[in-house]
Figure 1 (tube, one colour):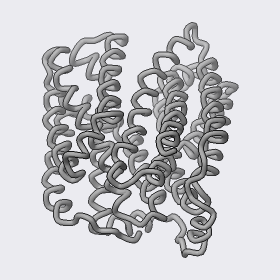
Figure 2 (cartoon, rainbow, N blue to C red; figure 1 turned 180 degrees about the vertical axis):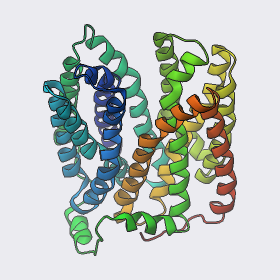
Figure 3 (cartoon, rainbow, N blue to C red; figure 1 turned 60 degrees about the vertical axis):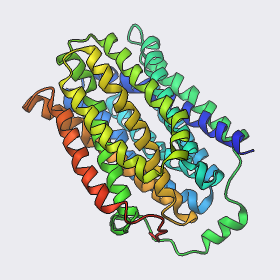
Figure 4 (tube, helix red, strand yellow; figure 1 turned 90 degrees about the horizontal axis):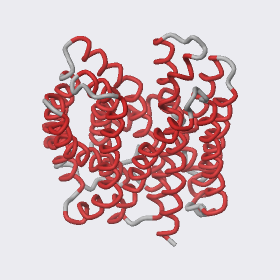
Length: 397
């Protein structure tokens, strides 16, 4: 039963991310049809992440109170409607509405992570959560390639409607094959508990906890570094390595495949041999070294060598940080804490690419990688002084 549920949630998340991957590379070209400026295009791309920053913690909290399944159904329906609006958009403001709606409901990854937490034992948690990362990787490997093919000739509505169809399949998968994990008794128990409204104080309270706070901060810095890397990857490949767009796509697929292999399989073996704290510590060190190699790589082959440990570190950190977080709070708060983590990650997706682009203009193609390595070094020092001494504590947020 557990394997069936895990497989189903993997398929649901994969279809969700496949739909997102179909349309993300096309948004700038779609917006240009309405004579949008570069600044406006940037705002359009950021709208989804900004809306997800607001929506993700709310969805996580609602899933604690009303159950995982109904929130997944509602959020997936919102994503479906968002893609339909994208396909029929006849004005720029409709594009913004579609991305805003999809962002508010697209934070359901936190609910999917909470679902996996419900159906896995503590010792298998990291392996189960690794399926989310694998679904991410596969969705973003396949989605952009298919979206580019479908948009041949400037038919940008076709990928949007295809993404809507994929979201509808995901909606059906949730309805027919994904049972609720919170029993009626458990939901009644949660409904009688006093739950505070979601405010900025929620962040401050969580960040002040001796175990939860450091993990959230580590997740924020890691996410900021990684999304900055993602955001300027194509520019780095073009300006530093002299690659064409199709070659850059192959290199991105290479990274996606490596991350997927780590989160889909290797992470389960690693967590059986090493503690999550140790994996987080060494993952940060490995990423810092790899970012330096990527920043100064003199050729494509050297860059590929650097991208291998970088992908390994990203796969480890992306999974173990969330797994460790689920073990620091009571079970009725898992959705809330994962929602907070997802919201913080979404915020980095708003600011990270802008920081990376500005650094490239100001200093050079090496600057984003150097800054990332510097932040990883500082983070490594922080981990050794704030994580190792605060293990196995359950905290109330």
